Structures are given as C-alpha cells and as structure tokens.
Image 1 (cartoon, rainbow, N blue to C red):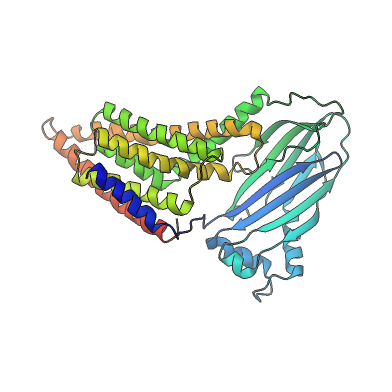
Image 2 (tube, rainbow, N blue to C red):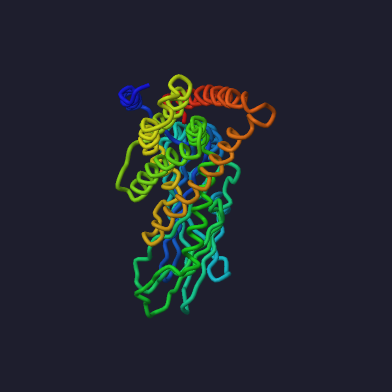
Length: 389
C-alpha cells in the first residue's frame, strides 16, 4: 500500500461523508450556565436528549401522548427540573423560580434536532466579601451527562476565586468575592489551577478508555511495532499530530464537521490494520510515520469534541489549563494501552515455546490481531457513514 494509495483513500472517504450527521445518541446532555449578580443568581439550562433517549424524555414531557408539547406540559416539566436542582449561597438554600422556558416540537425532539432552554432565577442579597455557591443537578441521573460553568460576571466588584466540580459535574462549588473594592488581579489560585488540571486530566483518561475507536487505532499501531524504537517513533508522530489539532480545535481556531471526522477516524483503524496484514513492509518506517501523523490530526479533532462538550462557556482563564489537563489525560490513557500491549506481544510468544518458534508465534498473533481490529474498524466505519457514531 503506497502513500499515493493512502492519500486517495482518505479523499475518497471524505467525499462519502459530506451528508453524514454525527451526534451522541444515548445521552441526555444537561448543560448549566450560572450567572452572578449582586442581587440574584441566574441558572440557564440547555437540555438536549440524544436520539436513543429522546422518546423516554418526550414521554415524561408529553404526558397525554398527543404528540404536542403544550404550555401546561412545558410548565410541568420545567417545574420537575426545578425540583431536582439545589442551589445554596453561603450554606443557605435559596429557592429557584422559572423565568422562561423554550421547547422544541415533539417531532424535533425525537430526531434530536432541538434543545430545551430553561431560565431560573434565585433572589439573594450578597453582603460582606467572601461567598460560596453550591449547585447540584439531580434530574434524570441514569441518562444524563452533566455540564456546568459560570459566566464571567459583568460587574468588576464580583470576582470568582475558585471552582470545584464532581467528576460527572452534577455537583459544583463556586467561591467568589462580592466586596465593594475590586481586586483587579482576579487570577486563579494555585489550588484552583491544580483542581482544574486534575478534573480535565480525568476527563481525558475517561474519554480514551471509553473511546473504543481510538483504542483500536493505537492497538493497530502497536501490532506492527516490532521494536521499542518503532513504537516510540510512531507514537511520537501520532502524539504530535493529535496534540496540534486538539489545541487548535479547543481554542476555536480549527473546525471540521463531525460528519467528516468520525468516519475518517473509523477508516484509520481499517487502513492501518489492513496495511499490517497485506503490506507489513509499509507498516513500519517512514510511510507508517506519515500515516500515523495524518490520521493523528483527525484523532485530535475527535479528542477535541469530547473536550469542547465539557468546556461550554468556560472562562478564558481556565481554557488553557483545561486543554493541558485533558491532553495529559489522553496521553496517560494511551500509554495504559500501548505499553502493556507491546510488552505482551514481545514476551508472551516466548513463554511456552523455544526461541526459534517465538517469532513465528508473534507474527501469527499480530496477524490475527490485525484481522480482528480491521473487522471492528469496519463495523465502526459503517456506523459512522450511517450517521450513528
């Protein structure tokens, strides 16, 4: 498989993906944005059910099953959401009231083409300087992916001094200063920075260890590496590439639709695995480094998709720390897979055979592993092209 064929393969695949849509199907995304003022706290919730869970969510809203979300049903559902929210300032719970609600049509919701937008307000008077806010969202826990962020206050005398989140972001604590004398420095404390890096490091690890397409790709790379130096080179090419596009996409400097990115990621698995099987000479050396780098650019865009979801309306101060922590998490998870797999391929074949048979056994394991990987990649490619991945 020559590099010319590889380029033709990528362009042909991209031409197939123009009309494909991609989105998360089995999740109920609930993103909360908090706004602070001296006399109130505002909560904006964007509720977006994926296709696979939309029918269940719609059944909770359209209680009379007439296919229309009436004003009364909107009000009733918004009230159920409100009851599942908890907000406290300085340890004192404060009541939320619904300000506005906007719902898509039932038809739009079942196709995952719309989102519900709920705005709540809690009145409070902030006296003194140091304050803490505690927020918890318990609505529809089994289905939900929670996100929460705070907008930068539009008044200089309210300064955010710290934020902590639970791993799933269903619980959130915000420390802020509402003193009359603004602190113009308003930077992140060392502990806050560490907390942000750790939080997004864990998100990066979780994103890789639950992203089977990424795991299959790096496994296919390992299956062709016969020496540690081969592995170091190909992993370095992949790492540099995905780090570039992850950072650029997370900063909003590059955007390629998921309809292109997801099929290319799936195709990368198939291409690399087939190259391992039928052209092992090209599975190592310079051509493999080029392949790892080019496909790594697309994998970086895939990683960025997972990061952007949890960075919605994040303050500019924390974006770089979030990217740094997430990137570290991605790399740590990659190594958790790469190193044990490489060690197993090197040492297991020789455990129960003599030294003359070990290379043949190792080669068979690599071939069988590549065949299995290519079949799994083909499955993911079919899903991606059908708009289901």
